[in-house]
Image 1: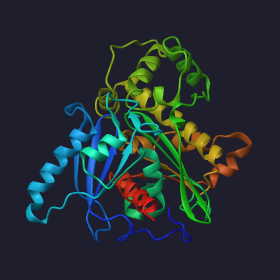
Image 2: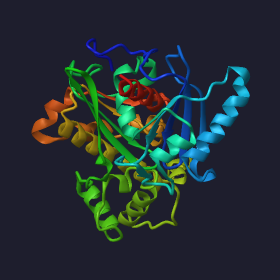
Image 3: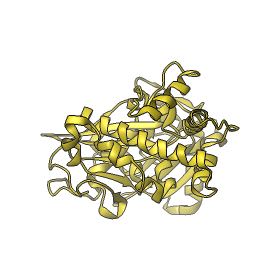
Length: 342
């Protein structure tokens, strides 16, 4: 998707905060670190570390910096500022992750890493900030038009370990990201099968949020409910096993689970587009959808996205695209740090 009125699509090379910058995109399963040196326009020296292998983000960051110091040798300079995109709501000094045991104090982390500035923002706030600068090779468009309404709001949703949601609004002073916890909004049924699946899940969970089913932690729950509705109860599977069962083994319950996942995600994405007025486009991030390959693009996602009654015409004009660049959130974190330093 491309809008001729968008700001430049290359990352800035100057800002008020001195470089180098330490960047991080920290989810429930992995923490991805990157480096932005003076004069660089894109994050480099990217390394992904499993969260389970470290006591917290400071320890993971220190391991990353030790390795970077070894690689760069005399060219290494300690980071002056950092931006961490974290998979949780951000408010106050204490940060507690939603889908991992990690927590930290922003002030203590800044002191431990000897930073002049540590900016902590929601991970989908960072991903939203990357949207206007994404180029064609970083996206795969599907369904609807190739271009959205110029100067209109954008939205991003992302099934990963959890389900992230954020918006990006154009203002007279530039783009403003709107972070939120939309993944915890109540998931709605579109047809009788959806209703039966949600009813099955409610036997165990009083509140069935979108994240409860449309995420890495949710796929096993969705699989169990689909199996129950089909009258074919199965042993519990991990998210990876569900995907493999659908794409490789031809397991009919796993196939129906993945198809249901795509359809429910489409309906949810349409709700987000309507809520935010995201007529510029809706982007899909996170780690799950890319693993589904062509099955996602052949699914009912776009049909469900548009199926909003009197507002079907509204959504017909809204493009949807998969973000294929796994470093997009790091780029958005760098942009947030640039804005913070102005």
